[in-house]
Image (cartoon, rainbow over all chains, first blue to last red; front, side, top):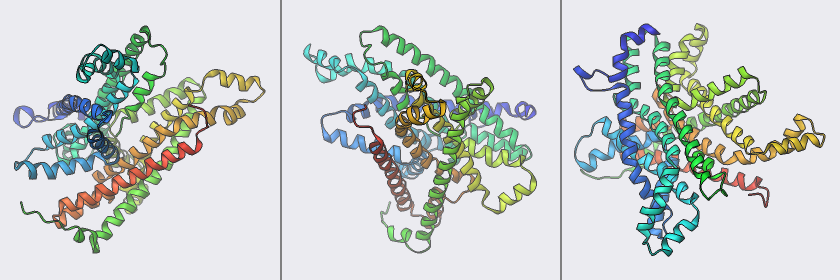
Length: 249
Length: 233
């Protein structure tokens, strides 16, 4: 196992980078991080639409959430793979395909996380800021979202872990991330599949386990901070928030 | 691009039959994996209840592995990696009898089992320790206390996350296409490659997945409503 690792660690880490396209775990992290960064603002929009009073906004957001919850990510990837070149007229790379699919998927899940965060805030917050004469948008921007987003940071880290795990599906459409690199190594060695796939599993494990521990640490901090505030009446709220972030794959 | 919409070709004859087989295999895979996950989840919970250090460590490691490694990688690991460690006659037998299907069921079932044990555990944790003490004080032994006091409440708490994970498990069966199990996603790709009717093929598969997921979600909501104790939460 160690000889496999010693001979191939650069391929797993950065792919064929100086002599070819960048790949490996760097692409895995790059892909999941950019998907999350693009999906957070979209997730806020989905959350606001989901709790909106207007059915015109609520219905499509609800439909998106249920579609994403009911359809495998692989199916979304194939849709993007086929539709984006048809709609834009340009061929797209595997990386962009994967990014689009992950953004669609994550914005729905993040939307649900952020919605849970907004709904966990006491109603008095909205009422007070409206009573102070703030508009709906100002209430959201200055009062509700700063608190709600802070409270759901642990769930967002959990979602980041899910996204990292989901990037492994890029292997199926030949995105050069770490699973693809492992497959290449396996095809070249042929004799050590157990070692190669064990290394692959351990790499994901180390990365995701560290982030999961970070999420737990952040959650304790957030809970402590919230307990210090006036709203002690909602002890179960934070736990249920993390549990809404159902991690998949 | 010339737009033409030809649902009939994909739904009739050989292609229709292919889709039907794909759905059958997806459902069989999901059903078997769910049964396996139930067994594994309950076993893990029981092991954890013993409160012995090595036993709880084992369960914690098992759960951490399955939560932090992508399901696709777990499937690949089982199919390409662990399979090579099995005795040769067993390997031959698996190659002969649809090994892809069996390994996919094992990988998906074990992964869901880990999540399921966490669902049951959080359900158990939500029951206050006083309930257990009260049941012991009333003269119930550990098993009857579990049977009549703790589990009826804990399992009710666990139903919603269990339904969520059943949907996730169902969606995860699509990953089995990576090792060539002929389930719905694999069949969709095959039909698409042969007919070039991408839009139609994906549409049918998406509608099928969505409909079956919604059935699971609805059934779950019905079960939760059925077992709800009136007046509690």
